[in-house]
Image (cartoon, rainbow, N blue to C red):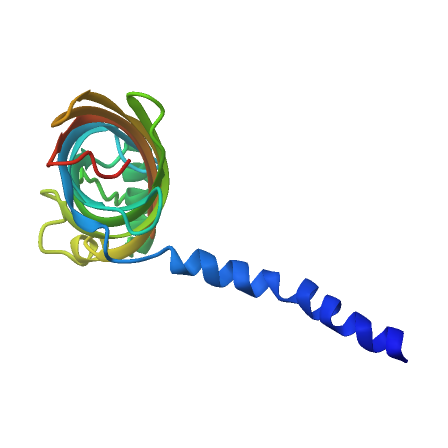
Length: 216
């Protein structure tokens, strides 16, 4: 019985480290390191599953560190593109199927539809400096504001259906190259999944660093 009792402290000690480690990890997150550490601009190309390739651009704000090596990054980005020809064909076919025409000759024709997509993102990126290069990897959430336009859909229910404000998720990977204390070069690949649209962007740009390198 004494042997059984003597084992109790050891069993409790073995069970305690897991919650303690979890609590220790959460304790690393603090607002003390938050600040405007840098402002960046980048430009590149965006490929989508429903749109033609387009030029895209973004403005970013590095908000410092919320935990060791973890930075929040706020950004606003935009691209303007046309719906791909096969997507236009699908829309025409669906609308034509709704037309009541005994002759079967009716055909809905849409020249083109353009989409302007503005995105507001909040990312959490893991960053670690390796010499003058800082690789980063991250996940984030965003809001996409879409505006569709085209002569054939103006003022129609189709225009309303293609215009929306939707939530999205993203994943990023890239690097920042230290050029000077106040000027860095950036490169990033970003994948985004949102309702009715998925896209992949490849962009390069600059990050203007405020006093202190921040985000590294």
